[in-house]
Amino acid sequence: MDDYPLDTPSHAGIRPQRPVDEPGGKRAPTPTDILFGPSPAPIGMGAMTAAQIAARATSDELQRRLLETPIAAATERTLLVNEGRTMGREFPLPAETRVFVVANQKGGVGKTTTTVNVAAGLALYGARILVIDLDPQGNASTALGIDHSEGTPGVYEAVIEGEPLSKLLVPCAEHPGIMVVPATIDLAGAEIELVSIVARESRLKRALDAHLAETEAAGEKYDYVFIDCPPSLGLLTVNALTAAREVLVPIQSEYYALEGLSQLLRHIDMVKSHLNPTLDVSTILLTMYDARTKLAGEVAAEVRGHFQDAVLRTAVPRSVRISEAPSHGQTVLAYDPASAGALSYLEASREIAMRNNA
Image 1: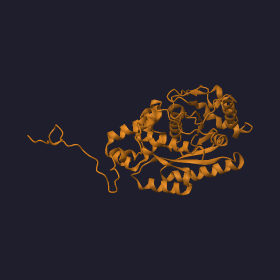
Image 2: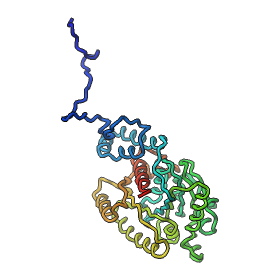
Image 3: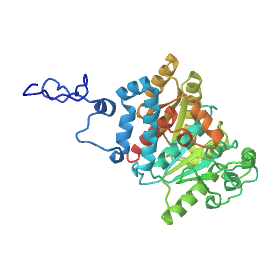
Image 4: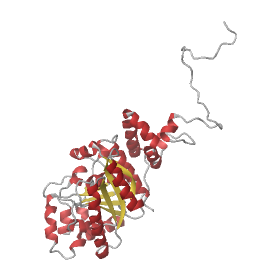
């Protein structure tokens, strides 16, 4: 037996791995560094801020590696969404209530989906949200699990009969912090009924302004208001544009969406000229983005080139989960937090929140 035995593991053939330093004395990157970026000090998952979580989610290297391992991708996305919900961190809240109208007269571009999922993403981080469903189809009410059967009191009573919004609110059970004013099929006749009403374009504005003043006086101010519009440029959409302060435009990554956008912008300019001079197209979100097609990239480049910083960096991909969620009366964040759609809408919510004090 040797007097100086080698210090080796008890299992033959297994040797401890040692990190190899890079030239210059720098520590070689670990797998954690590659996935989550270098950290000056160890950071536990519970101590991460929302911005750090989002930075992990948008890392090109992370995306590449997650695509190589689908199980890891699902796990990582679930952690990102669920940690954001449970760790007690909040997005920065606006000093004043931000009132968004989600509008695009082209149907099927993701207006309702964007409304409910951005609202849910912001609510996860402590924001108080009011969602006004102004579409007679009531899809936003469905996605948030709110009953909107015929005869249910809702936005029709506020716009046509002058009922206070405070009497029409329904809390969203799935997402605490979200209050909903539902839409019913009764709203389909509102376009005709509004024609003969005085100041017909500002009926929703008066109801909303009164409600916001009431809640602020009571110390229960909303942080965001989202108004989901029907796919048209009728009087309901005009009411929404008159009541709002900002416009959020979802754009499908296809050519027809660009044609519809030009019509919408002309309509918004008319509203600004005559009814709401402060209205601003502040946010544009690319939806149904398919990175495999050249057309989607061209549409995205065209939109970003024209609208510059108004376009969110996040593009929402095509996702079966996003389409399935409303059939369960849920947002995609509640239905499948592991999906790419859920993570994209959470990131879009973060971008909107980071613009609060811009």
